[in-house]
Image 1 (spheres, rainbow, N blue to C red):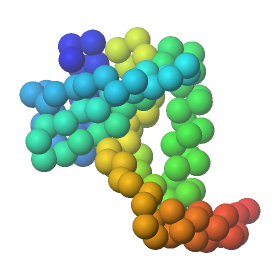
Image 2 (image 1 turned 120 degrees about the vertical axis):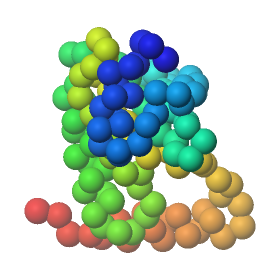
Image 3 (image 1 turned 90 degrees about the horizontal axis):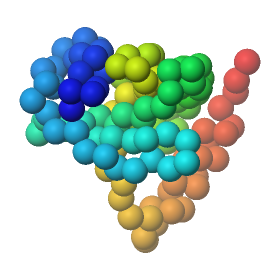
Image 4 (image 1 turned 90 degrees about the vertical axis):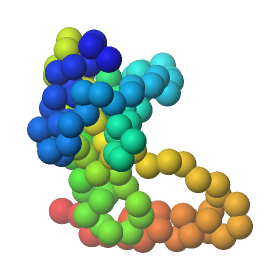
Length: 122
């Protein structure tokens, strides 16, 4: 957790929550980024990290998420903070637990995605 202390401080500034006693758990990521869950029992955050020179990638992703969220069509995580700290570029988001797409959930998701794509953009 010490390796991300400045990132955690930035999330604390953005949320007003004390997170220095929170647990941070690696949740994989993939070929491009590393991903972590930060949880203090009452709030959870999803954090993506990469090398500092890729900060513009996270800035672009944050702007895209803001635009998607503004369509009010499908559940999109809130952007908490992004930038460079602790020798990493990072993007911190609201953590949304993934659910099942059984039953009508996949049809609903398709309808919501279609609504998002119909939203006019400049």
